Length: 128
Length: 264
Image (cartoon, rainbow over the protein chains, first blue to last red):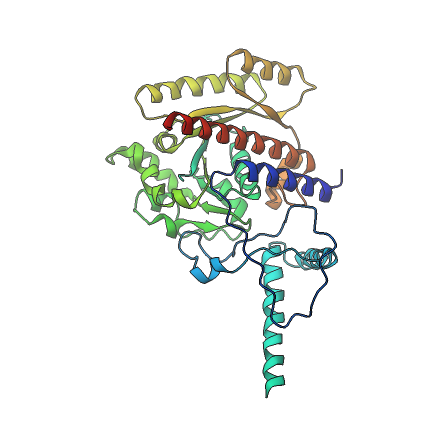
């Protein structure tokens, strides 16, 4: 089995077993909040079938001390369109060649931060 | 709910203790369990898997000896849901210094207690000896996993270790449930491997159904700091450790449910 497939299989297996056996109840599913200026999107035709390999906790904070209420209120997982998820993953793997320790979470978060900053600037410019 | 504290221990060296602890911890985290890996071995091998810069400031020594708050000692790893209490060579001093400390057996459990609610599992990687730090770490454990290589000396070592730990149980220092013996570096084509596997079972020991295959790739994984779930990890080893992790999850889940029944 190719390594990538083996890795997906392993992650899927762990995710499934972990969900059934995890001692504490998982966090409740947050209500998805649409991004204010995002163009209306069609319903996703399908969702990614593999367990999410993207880490879901901020990497630069210590777990016991750093969670703020605002952090925990915001949804931290979101299903992407299949095509977008595939592009994101490919871009992450590409970036990982230069920085082997780059996590998918950091990569995706940085992309989003940058896009949101650009969007805010555009809105400010449009308003003025 | 309190984290399940799992000690990975064997006084025989070179049996894959740290490799097992690291991959178990990574597997649990990647299965969604919030996991803390505590490196109690002054060799710091588990630490090195997640600390390529080798820039540990606070370690298990500071935690136990200096009373550093555990929150300050914990470091995040590159794996989501997996944190680390690192070790350095300074931890070697603990074996001697613990001896003169009051309530020495309880020191690690006491130090970790504040963060138990923050995690689902705490994995302790112990050093290959029967020193005071090992005893102190075992005292903190709820569950015990004994990895061994598939050799006659390995089988002999497991029985000696469990005989020694029985004395700790007798003196109420150890109360951890033996989850099982994990056969590492196993080659089913060799007579010694098969004899060791069957021998451990005939010794009446719980042996994990999963065995970890003997692979040169284990060293490659260590060199490159790859663990279970990484795309680059050896597929056979990753699959074996995933099977093992699922076995551990299931055993702990069952034990927890049974405890719940008794308490109900």
